[in-house]
Picture 1: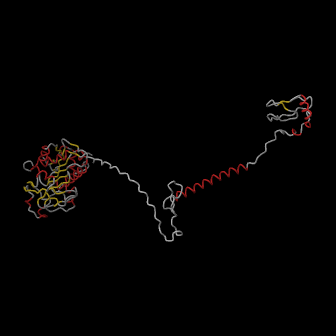
Picture 2: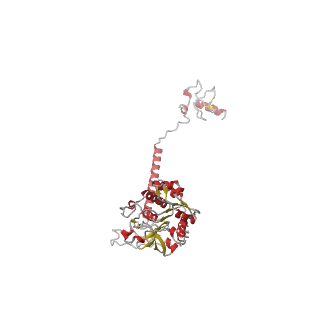
Picture 3: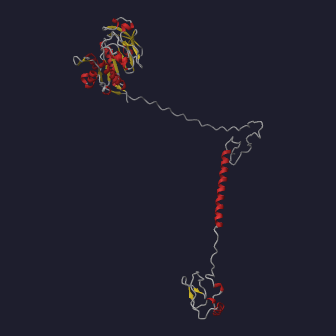
Length: 408
């Protein structure tokens, strides 16, 4: 700007000749005469002292007149815009939801006659509306397109797994066999069972008598059956030997006049031992009275006197008489002796009702001479008195059963 221009400028604004310029405290820009605001940054500054306010041009009379304050806008339009946008989005969402719902409901074949075409955009060409009472007065069902059969894939046969082999039995080389006997309280000793013990040793097993085991002696002497299960776990087999008549109360009968005086302590002990060995799954051989006790222990009963009840002569079975018994084909005795064998008999009682699960292995007329149920064997005769190899065959078969214990 030239000097003439400066003069003209001062004339226009009535700028005094001795005016000292003022500079902005904030940005350092030169302030014009009469201005209270920096034209560069808008910073406010007081006019120089002695300058009359009347000399300020009208446009500069108001603070920051060169930069008028911004116009305050109402927030109402913005709020209205936001609300309108939210409502629009919400409306679009509802419309999409209803369209999808209608598409899912009517896209199932058979629902209002609507079927989705192959491109998924609506009814397939040629589809007709489902019949209603209005458009189908005859109430007939239009033909439906049969579904296209899908090719089936041949199933691959699965190989049948081989059957699980049964567990291999455990072999016991020298099984230990309990032999029961009667305790005589008057003498304080047990009856000897030398013949049975010798027969057990002859076939490679170890006989266990009351003298060999205190628990066995206690149960046979007192009838206390507390340790019956423990004895069954310790030993491999049980032989129930002969003796007197069994108390009729153990098979729910009244005593017969011909019955002898029972030894209920021995009956109680042997019944408990028998059931304990059955529970342990171990073999039992009942001989003479022992077969009758095995039948009673497993739920059978006895004929208390053969001559009176069966009408047979006493000499046919008692008094150590010999007679031939008939053996059932397929029984355990048939494998040993065939269809018959000559035996010794010394009994006046016999099995009446056979215990559940047992079968008759041998008989003489109406008298049952042998029974079996798996490894539970009973014979009415004394095998140790059989001629030839008879005794060995019976005990050998039993000890073999005791030598192979099923794996648990």
